[in-house]
Image 1: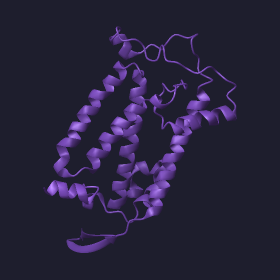
Image 2: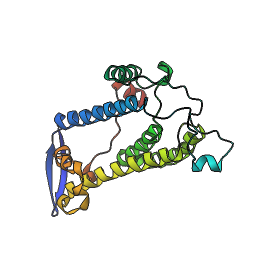
Image 3: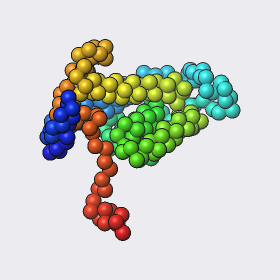
Image 4: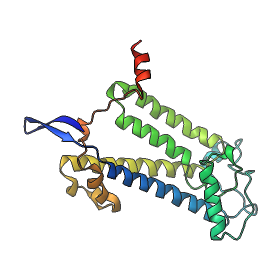
Length: 236
């Protein structure tokens, strides 16, 4: 429970915001569902992509830097199978138990050169840090943005993705993040029904997720130490 002063029509009142667990649970369900759909798509596409008999796709980055080999030319791929339900489930479970870390299992799925997950993680971290970090850490958010734009060319230099994979990841991540936060801001400002973004399919979830949440201009961005031990160490 958080009590926060809200100014409306030059009159300041204290409004109590009670944290709700249900929206958090719904958001976790969406996250798990998205992960599961991604793993099913990878496991299903593995037996349906051309391998060996086709040359790598032409790419802008690798034409500008011809000394850099094309991505995943010698990457090991598990042999094709009949792709039945049992095979797909076993692939999903192996990825789940290894947490997606290739060092904990042999790489076997190929066909994920469609969108760069590394780019998604980089930009999502930078966007969240810029949006929610305290004002005194403003330069840290700026540094994160610059580091992200340095890291993206490194992904291409590592020959893990094509240029279009990185571009799609950037567009997908930034547009979804900016769309949701634009809808959230308009909801708290009272003109949610007037913006064109409300026509998006998932806009109806915003009032449910943002109900009883502090407006962005009153949101207290405070970083707290995770335990009393660290707090005592900081005082010393």
